[in-house]
Length: 185
Image (cartoon, rainbow, N blue to C red; front, side, top):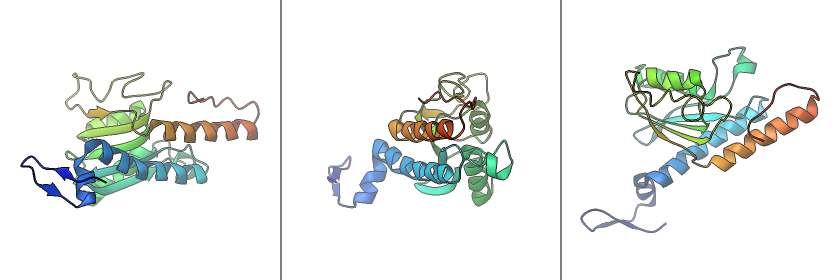
């Protein structure tokens, strides 16, 4: 990694510090952790979506889809990560948090981000069928709500998309006639 110059012209040789100052590289770095959570969900037979919450360049919460295994329809990756982060910081408001998630959040999860006052959302692939942020609904940026979330999309999107496509391809082969159709193919 090349050294970066600060505003005063000095260089910093610490590659990690430099990485975390470059927002694109930081987003890709932390999205890697969300992708790892998605792989764990896939390995557990859940839809492969993963999320991490970062505050001050530290992961404070992580989650992966668990509605099937936990018999909890709200156990989406984002909700699991929000719960863990709120518990760790001791506050339900996560005003300095960035949530990284592999797929565009659904309406429920987008609403939870607004309610938790999350500062920023970074997601990978769009969800054309149920996206609650950009594609179907625009919950995170809706000016009628009391909080808006800064949104960055399409970060490492192809990796998340491939995970979803492979998962649903395998599911369709295992259960012919299954009505569970994916918009990721």
